[in-house]
Amino acid sequence: MISFDNNESHVRYKLVEEGKMTETQKHSIGVIGTGNFARAIAKRLYYSADDQMIAYLSSIDDCFCDIAVGSISDCIQNAEIIFLAIHFADYTDCLGKYIPELSRKILIDVSNRDRPSETESNAEFLSTLVPDAKVVKAFNVLSAYAIEEETAGGSRRVFLAGNDTTARTKVSVLARELGFYPVDLGLLKSSRKIERFPIRLFPEWRGPIAFSIAVFNIWFLYIIFIYFVEKSAFSWEQIFIKVTNKPLCMTAITLLSATYLPSSIASMFQIFYGTKHIRFPYWFDKWLKARKQLGIMAFILVTVHVIISVLLMSPTYWRSWYHPIKIIVPKNLTEDLELPMVTWMIWKGEAACLAGILAFLCLCILAVSTIPSVSETLNWKEWQFIQSKLGHVSLFLSVVHVIIMGAPGWANGGVVKILKSITFLSLILPVITLTLKILFSFPCLNRYVTKIRRGWERNNTGCKAKCSKPYNSGYVVSKKENSKLDFNFDAEASQMIQFESDACECHMLKNV
Ligand SMILES: NC(=O)C1=CN([C@@H]2O[C@H](COP(=O)(O)OP(=O)(O)OC[C@H]3O[C@@H](n4cnc5c(N)ncnc54)[C@H](OP(=O)(O)O)[C@@H]3O)[C@@H](O)[C@H]2O)C=CC1
Ligand SMILES: [Cu+2]
Image 1 (tube, helix red, strand yellow):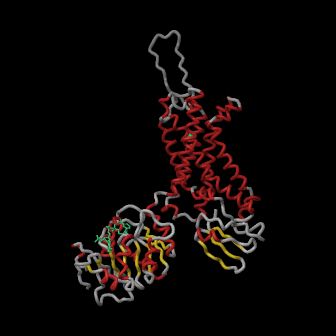
Image 2 (spheres, rainbow, N blue to C red):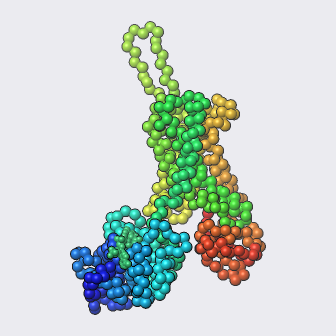
Image 3 (tube, rainbow, N blue to C red):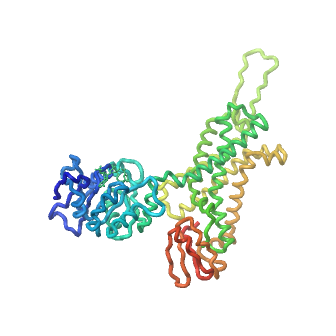
């Protein structure tokens, strides 16, 4: 056992009990630090260790009485894998004097920074500071609380990156032993990405939410203009529910169209360029990636629209859906008169309800299928069927719902009135989306697009792809001359690549 060193209490560790494990089976694990993270990981190591794993070290807590606390130099000497549970700013101060001893040790960098650097991650700095150590970035995405408590919320995935494959594998195994799910992101430069994970707040949702709010506001203001400024169709008292319900419906159908329109636009791009190896414009790439979020936003708005519509289901609120109540008072009334205030829906009310319910049902299935535990049970074809076919069916039923709501009104008005009606305006985008979908489903076009997506190129003599413009990773660039793929995932580096037109190939990794 390593002796307790009162002067240097930063280090805690326990060595493998002699004779119990062999060096080939086990790794000794050290933790440098005495703060929240160090305590949490030491506790976790203490409870999760099994025969496959060697010892871990440390903690001065009473409950860890069989874990010795020692000096930093003891820890470095005896541990093969070392958790560096100190702040990034203290790296040089803490490790500066131990650089030769750290040679060939696996250093797990768990640090985070409020503002990660774009050019050098903490882990990359550490690997420059201790060039002979095998630095692995890992565990920084977990909070100390999540490490200590199995019941803590949040993902239990541990992203890791490092240049040494064996070190990465050892840390992966360790993460699994500790009850987490390791996700290997490859080389150490991926640590820049990993260090951005803990500080991000739903980045993929920002655009779709902002877009949904903008679309809702546009519809809301237009509806206020039509129903309050142009004519006084409602009292201001109805602004909260009855009036707000209309832009909810319009926004939902607009978002649903925005979810399905990009796949047709992508087909148009591919037909125009005659190849699938094209780089979409930045805005379109963002739009493609936001489809799931747009669909979920549409589902949320439809749900609110359904709840409000059910709440308001009465002849007073949905006058045009019901037969008017006729009360004929007899002239020579001699006794008490009973007036039955009962009325039935007309065909418009019933048909609009049916179309709305079916559209909502399809959207419910779509939403459920995006839950990870459900989507894992589907194969690729089933997933595609639900997301694409059912999505378009739902959009079609929504269109039918809006047409039933609006068409009787269109019949009574002139062209200007039709063009100004919210039902007509809200149908433009969905109808374009559905028309394009039908167009691309025709066998001739469908076959042509499928051929392109399988890799056929209309004009394969030159390189039409624009690989030189960086904004995203995920592109593979290959030079034809040595017919060898040069995998390049680095945005900065891909900026530098300029090819002769007949000597280049660009492969986009993402299939639309
Ligand atoms: N807490 C959390 O939930 C998470 C933390 N992390 C990362 O873990 C690391 C530690 O965080 P946390 O435990 O919360 O921080 P704390 O402030 O609780 O602990 C910091 C530790 O570093 C030690 N230390 C400071 N300077 C030196 C030095 N020069 N030499 C040796 N040891 C030193 C401190 O010792 P002393 O007290 O004696 O000065 C203390 O034990 C950070 O990099 C953080 O980004 C990552 C994910 C989650
Ligand atoms: Cu509706």
